[in-house]
Image (cartoon, rainbow over all chains, first blue to last red; front, side, top):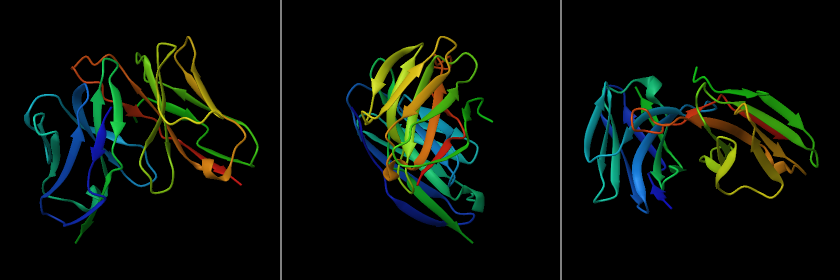
Amino acid sequence: GQNIDQPTEMTATEGAIVQINCTYQTSGFNGLFWYQQHAGEAPTFLSYNVLDGLEEKGRFSSFLSRSKGYSYLLLKELQMKDSASYLCAGASGGYQKVTFGTGTKLQVIP
Amino acid sequence: DSGVTQTPKHLITATGQRVTLRCSPRSGDLSVYWYQQSLDQGLQFLIQYYNGEERAKGNILERFSAQQFPDLHSELNLSSLELGDSALYFCASSGSGTSGSYEQYFGPGTRLTVT
């Protein structure tokens, strides 16, 4: 199975860059997801990394190092609406069992 | 709109009662997942179905059960409800990963309040 670890809370300033880290223990690891969840709402898919390296999608980028069991989500040009929880989730096994971390609550301040 | 629907949106019931939550996956998705999220807590995986068969089980209580029907919609049954069962219950669906990924698309959730 997976053991997902990410910081509980982070604070960053509007317009800045923030990096949210995630480490995982691999057991049949297939790939790593990042989701965004605003309070009281459903999680929404941000990215999925299978191979090592950085994948960029607009203001959001996600990085994976399989050998280190490490990923990060990079958010650039922070906006107030980016205040949310960011969930790291590992996929493993033939049936793609997904294990979610507890999430990192990001607060963007003016 | 993710394409996943859940009913009802809100449910208020008393301890000891039984409720059924319903989920319809995105068109074409064969996998359905159920999650519980208590206040300020992470997503707790409950159970996964694939094309009508149970595929994986998480920390699902014996008082809870689920099934996926031939039309692929799923129901989560919660019985002998306790105050601690009050939570947001999310359903998610995923497909066969045409892009190589199996991202889950979440429904809006059912907020259950047990009084």
